Length: 94
Image (cartoon, rainbow, N blue to C red; front, side, top):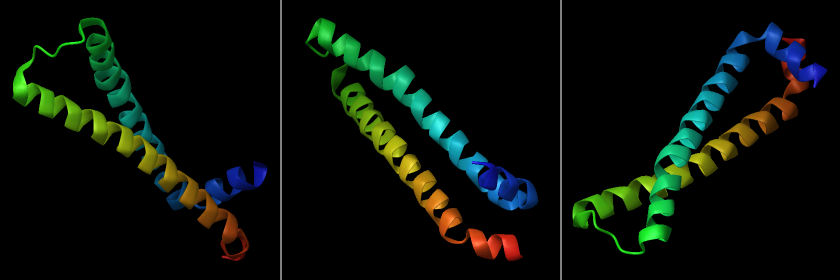
C-alpha cells in the first residue's frame, strides 16, 4: 500500500484518474441505493405495478443500467490497479 501511496504522490495524473473512477462508482452506488432498492421494496410489498407502462419501462431501464454501471466501474478500477501494478517499475524510473 505504501508503494501505491508514494506513486500517487509523485504522479498526480494517476491519482486523478483513480479519483474519477471512485466518484463514478459512488454515483453508481447511490443510484442503486436510492432508485433500485426502493422500487424493489415497493414491488415486493405491492406485487402489482400501478405506475403504468412508461414508468415500468423507465424504472427497469434505470435498474438494469445502475447495476451494470456499478459492475463496470468496479472492473475499470480493477483494470487500472492491474495496469499500475504491472507498470510500477516504469513509473518509478520516470
